[in-house]
Length: 367
Image (cartoon, rainbow, N blue to C red):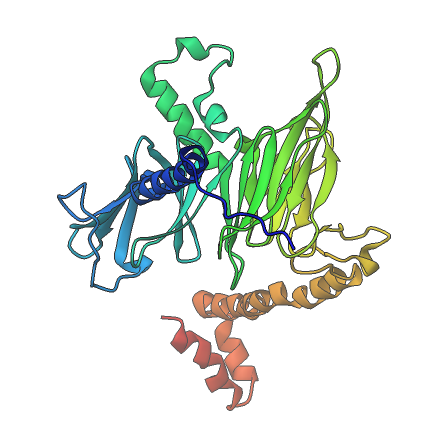
């Protein structure tokens, strides 16, 4: 039986092992000294570099939250600053609440969820294309905007890009740009849907609205010649399927209450009401399908016979004040004989005694 001799490690065979160890050591050192993810910095009053732990338990109701340059929290009772949350190299543009949590849009296209009570950063999300749309670079007239105009435009678009839906028990939020919409669950920032418009179309976040159940965003479309053609409105929900409807190129959406919106589609087509909870349009009274409609006008549809019955009941009401006027009319002839005097005496002589006091009654009440 032959045996293989023991292998002797030569300097050349040791080098690869040393290289691997050096790479691992360098990686560990880099991991230990890596910068804070997303540049997060939470500081107390007067100390922008510290990361304090606030022992006081607070809630969103106790704090006044503001944006610029980061997310700034102030005590409502005293007005003193409680804490400041900032990100290196980024500026906070817009703030909206999702339940008890603050959602912040930053100028670099990052969206952050913060729990105000203990200023804990819950999650970050990057929205593709959001930063470019906020800046508006390359748009017609962009080179002529002043710094103040650029900042104002970024804030306006940040407010249009974020919509929070205060659904009971599980708030969620929609993020949108002209080329993309995203729906996130606030509980953990989980992406639930994303959608892109059809070719030749673009979403219009500046016309988007939301209710307690859905987010609705209009879209505009153009043909190959660049002319505006029929557009539409897309509705998104997190707990069920969304929907889409065709409209003209300039349809507007107005929120009426927690679930209903009014859609206006030009001067010819009458406005219609859409219920975002039922995901169905409101059916007008008198329509053939009204008895079977999923959504009826608020207050319901009244039976055409009901107004006539109501009018008949109201008709006697005006006659009530007329009755006293009719009783006052006979009083005038009674007063007239009293004033003439001469005719009254023969009447008193011809009549028995009991009627005489009755005739004196009105005269006594006259003054």
